[in-house]
Length: 389
Ligand code: FAD
Image (cartoon, rainbow, N blue to C red; front, top):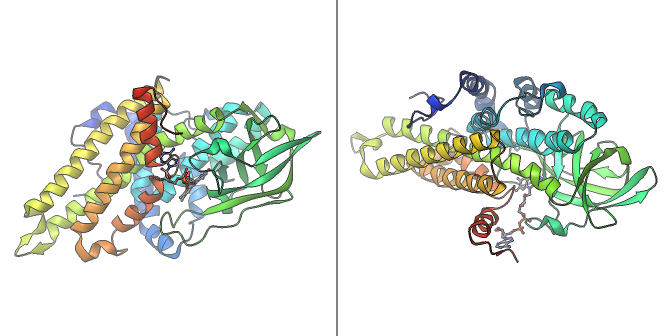
């Protein structure tokens, strides 16, 4: 079995356009050539492979749905999903870099930015000349970002930004940060903060056992003077939430990519590894694992494809995106764990990708809304009752 042939048990390829298949092929080939051979090493060393920023830009993985006049790909949401699926087949950290750049940095600048802001930032972010990050989470406000303490105060032609953000992907290597902060009226506003502004620092977060090949850091603002032209034209939680909807959509596809790689690896191993004179794939217990994996992957592929159609038609609800994000993470976590067991002792080594995926998914299941939070979103949607507070 070729590891990079997508499981396609229900002939889903027939639902894809030629262009979508070509896009998938090009990202798949990139991952095969540039990511899979090096990523385990970077993860083991807990280092961010900085070269991927330019590569992902060249490949069109940054802001694929942003119009071409701003450097984006002008592509549809299924193409975007397929890109994220293939990147995460390589590593969740690589997909995270692309998700943050495209959905959490480029999208708000495109959607809520002035023409000047769009032209200043988007082409450089699309090409990978600049890397961006998105600061919403704070030390004391994760699932409840509305309680944030980071704030801006009016000071004439600029605002003064104070506060701190935590767990911010890409932060240590970013030139640009889209930061969410409360103004004097208590409204959440988005501000574009640039590296080099006085009082702004990005200390690196060390000691992660997950997403080790992705750089995570804090954003610390100590009386940072930010020009008013860097403020985005949106008020309230809807600003960051609209970005998260796009990124979560990418995670729904991406997590299934990680699951596919675990499944492919376990399937190949089960046909080669012989115990008791038979390939372990001949044992019913191992077949049960493989059969359930491919069933769950197939269901998730169908869910994602349909969600992509709804996204393209501007009909997808954030609640539908929550369900697909939660489902993708859940099946990826379960599949990674079963696949790891199928490899026995080899499953815990870096010779195979499974343990890395398994640890990565622990972040993916937590960020952009935890597993519990997405369940509560579905619960509230179907009952009309809010169980958050
Ligand atoms: P908490 O909110 O403290 O939650 C702790 C537990 O309580 C969870 O299990 C949660 O589900 C549960 N819980 C919370 N509220 C409720 C409730 N009402 N009912 C039931 N259970 C509840 N953030 C950014 O802004 N930008 C980034 O780029 C970014 N990158 C990240 C990268 C990594 C590797 C990680 C780990 C996180 C990243 N995050 C980022 C932060 C992430 O979004 C938060 O960790 C996440 O939202 C959860 O917040 P928390 O960690 O504070 O957990």
